[in-house]
Length: 162
Image (cartoon, helix red, strand yellow):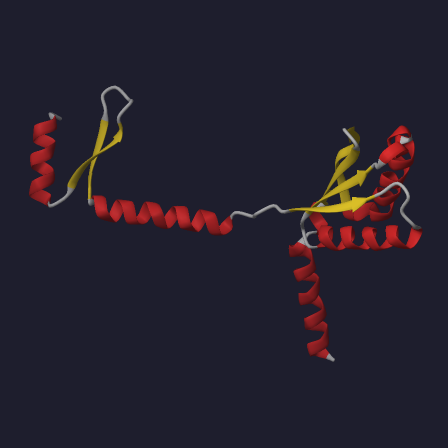
């Protein structure tokens, strides 16, 4: 259809002539109410933003000379972050001459990873970056928030029967 004829048809119907695919040959146009089109488009974008999951990375800092109880506390906080569905970055910082013994840091990070066990997946294995050694952990699919909510629903239904 000729562009002028399309414009006349749009005016007769009280609509707008909107170019949908300008790069195609020939260009594709549609007759529609442009204000309503923009409103629906922004509404779809808003809805898609609501369904997006924001991934947060929590950092747990460790040192090579950490005591056992402090290590347990740090491990428990990392476990809490993973159960909440967040990724955890384990950072072991070397000070002074500690950098000469990276195997000590490797052992501590491996100990934390083993204690987190089946609740976390190692996304990035421990590696040296300057004076620090880092490892990235992410929650397993089945241990994130939705499963915990489902488990709470089962407990609630059993309480109602008693």
